Image (cartoon, rainbow, N blue to C red; front, side, top):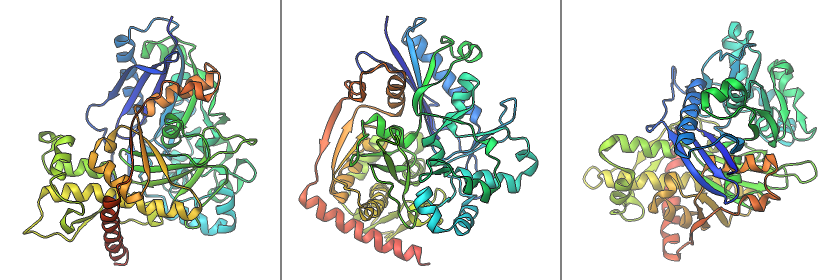
Length: 498
């Protein structure tokens, strides 16, 4: 009988599920839905919401399809792992009914609430204890609900991150993790527990926060209702949960200090692991508890995030053809233009406040547009170079914190499928890039196996992880891309100072 591990990756663009064979470390089957991007509702400027039941319904459909495609037999699925979009807020009542749409990661409504809390708590507390400003993270979003929807707030039984919600739908139990609470800015790194000071400032009752379980552990089990809906056995243990960036690092076997992972999906990220609780004085990058953190062997994840990444690429796709043009065709068009897009520069923001801009809104913009020279090829090229430039800007912040950025690992997916993007990333940042055949749902499945104890050690869990390419900087291209980056920074400074 096969030993299968089921991993879910609950994103803001799609939901993906993978069945992984624990013995071979290879994916048996994967399914992602919807085939077009999930909607993000924006009832007001800078708001971003999704219905948590939409995530669950797609998770159900993915699982049903996988069970059928892989001809899964009773007893074969041994454990379930969950990866999820970070920083979201889901609220439910005592009957576990969702009370309002989830306020997701790119929502900016609570920025001023977080700024006020930072002033009230003080930098001397926030930076060494929280390793971050409260910003517009989950705690600030909950305070927004309290201030603006008081009648609804009174009905809240528990708050959750998106992955906690999926685990609740699977098991009927409401739980969370230390890593999850740290990403919500509820965690005090000095006392190694929930920050009572944050709760006091926001006037949040501690009873709203779920019980904490380890990221790798038998956390709960699939109940009869969910089993019938998904077409799987009741009693399968849920053994892992993590936010998408810590989980992406796990999926790439980035678990040791000095290792780095990157993604370029809806948002673009670089995630570095350190043994020290580092922080940026301006909270332009953020530090959270990594999935394998323990008191005896501390591991922290420093996260650089740029909201305007894949969402910009999809925007230019809609602008220049929508369904009539594919991403590979866009890359081919962009490749016809030299490095630097003949002076056209894209500032790739415009998807909520940007952390690297100190949580200030910076609109997306095209700079240096020449109507006699530039066409869609230049816009496509400038968009990819602009995204990489914004990541490089964050790289500089991470380097100043003391992180050693030399080799970065990525899944061969999303914008890393683009040769132009890879070339710009490697040469602008002067790093080696390793590409692997993996994704977040595979990482969640491996995490489930680790949590269940199916693997002897972490290395065994990654025996089936396949590196498919390595890229190194080219001296001439490095010089060209450094010029692109310096030009991008000069335009950014003009935009910031308006």
